[in-house]
Length: 489
Figure (cartoon, rainbow, N blue to C red):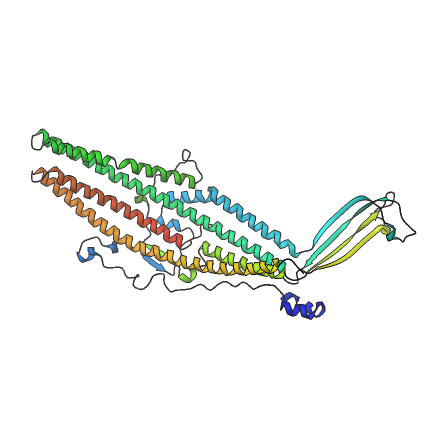
């Protein structure tokens, strides 16, 4: 169409100018839309050893049900039913500095898009000036000349670049796409922020539960030591048993300092996320028992995922901007037409400036056709086409990665349920073993080492249950992040 307009000439082409928009039109890409996230064999839960041995509980007791085709709520963290967690997220969204910077960058991008839109309108300016002028003889003929004189001028000017190729429109389109990209980046920052807040909160709660478990273990170690000491005082055991019990207590005491350090690091990170210095933060005492794990998980369809995830929307906006950039580079290859009109008053000292006899005006049209620029303009257009191809490939890759992340977390949640069931069964067995070992030790049928070994297994199983439960919470958070929940209201 563009070449046809140029061949027809200015007159007959007027009716076609509106259709001569340089570059390709942007169209939202078609994303691959599988029916589900997992392959058929992955959707079947594997039979567990617990089921085969008729041991309770089983993974089904801890499994979460996926509601495929249901949209997760915008405030997805409320599914954990914790007021303390809701307050932390609200504070982070309101005061986090990284998110504040992203919002400011978004406002900047919006203003630049508005500024670019001004190019479609004429530019109007008021002008005023004073000067001294010497006109040469060529102005009036060789026999007449004027001495230097001073003058005053005031008036206005209007200039307009005729966008008959659509280059200005493409430039505006590009700026708006970049603003949309920044909007998606801001949504991604908000989503990452909420995920980080909840992740750190769950870690704090998990570490507290582990500290409680170790504290219980130390209480049992102290009880064992008193039991062995009493038996030693009665002459029924040797000093070796006492030293063994003391060694176990001292060994288990080394478990607390690393956990307390992890707790401090997680609390400090949480304080920074809610825009507080660690020394000034007033954080709630979070515990796993105060959180409710969502048993039903709303999961959007794969075909809807690309319209929910901010990183996919950002990649789409970049593709849109790259498409518009091709139009800008194409328009730069053709003539640029500018219309300029001026009007006002000019007078010399002593004359009435605003007299009708001192009016002056001009109407100028200009055409600039690139002739030689060392191949720069055509190279810029080829570069824009290359960027368009790269943006398309990046978009497709982001979409595929989003499907992969959802599939990963769905599988992780299935395995989390299996792990919790296995750890719970191990804990029940270890607890029974501890009780049996203690009774055997009291009866004199076994030594203190059997008690300590059974207790160590129970402690490991208890910590395993806590860690498995925390991992299920964390993987649930990762699922909602992979689904692209929008934290910006």
